[in-house]
Length: 233
Image 1 (cartoon, rainbow, N blue to C red):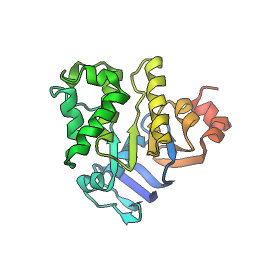
Image 2: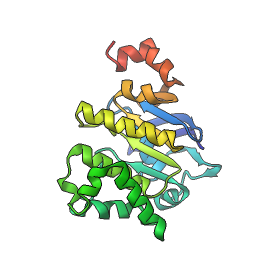
Image 3: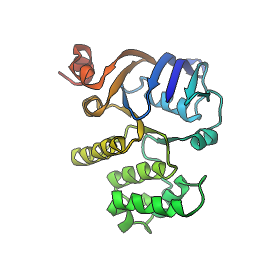
Image 4: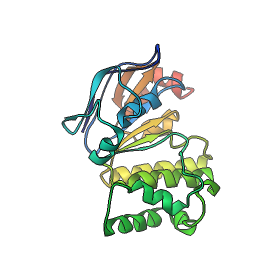
């Protein structure tokens, strides 16, 4: 579904990504782990079209989208759940969800809205409240649901567990597993390497902008380098 080849990106003179190669097959859950500042969010921003690519290319379902604008990528089926949730705080929960479907029209939008409320009943309960009044966990549920309202073929998840209590982290990862079981292709970026690799089909380890390891998720959990650097073992 997604093929990244020799991808590099810069912030001014600072190189954030250096010749990254990565593939994601349809229906896969692929995790990208690495320390703070490794370039994980930059890679997602390149995929979403909000961070310029210096070199290399991005191919999505056979189409080269390296220079495509963000709105075209959404139309093709790529949606991102950004780091820190990025709610439209003053708007209601329901308005945030409807904004996720801004490119769509017709009764299916209402059907999907009902599906989001069934998946996260607390969002239905608070649908008229301002999104900014939600707890961190509820905002993460809203951020995921907002992205799903665009009916993505590829869901990009950036640090979904950030700032959440352990019980809520478990709930969010259960949701990710459910989405995968329902056929959604997922690219999961996480600092919580143990949780991410534990549910991933495959994983990549990013260090200072370069991929240094890739393997099956479970195999990376058993990798001594990963254990030492990311699992504290």
